[in-house]
Image 1 (cartoon, one colour):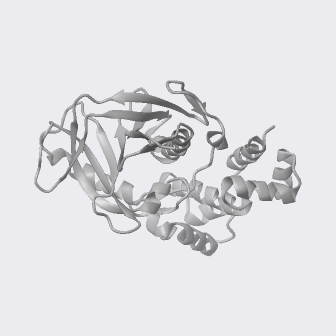
Image 2 (image 1 turned 135 degrees about the horizontal axis):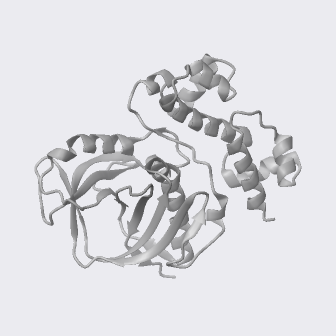
Length: 303
């Protein structure tokens, strides 16, 4: 068994037992390592100490429960191993910047520390070969866009830390921007009936440690609408990472992070870089299948 496989086994066990007591000794035995070496290897591969990781994953599940269940906050706290409402609130605010009470009564969306899939750091596939991993399907292909496409929406600066989805926690600025876009989408003229929604990342004069993010949808080519930002996807060759998940929530949370992680490594392995923008192409959810694509313009790295 590879070292990453041993640690992944413990990660899977933790995920299945978030409401149970988890001991280092049990996890180390499962991985076939001493407690000392297990903790060192876990921290190295997951980038978090074991119990910090357990806390983050328990809080991630608690976030879901707070919005979907009608149980008291204290009950949720006790379910995930917190000794009191106060301790839970303190941990929640430290990680997300808001209290569980405020979160439960607002439409705020939060970035989570995603359960890692270590296989994505070690397994490589060729173009046009699907990779099935932890409930999602990834595939890298090439696409040629013969004609430019126009997208219109709302653009704002977001922290570069937002691009660390899956490892960065806190309020999701991108999700908030999408909420703002959906509130006005019906008022935007020239929208294509079968057009895609698109998230675009580019600098656009953003200040230090920030980038510009556009949440928008496709309109008739060349359209310009006062009060909205236009993004034109140029006719070019693109490297595309398509991925699907069991639902839209899974797609836009853990799946998008895993796809990003894999794509970065895939491009590095193939000695490719990219230009100054990247886009997220969204497709309608059909037959229980949620699907989206990351598009970049590949640029060979000169050695």
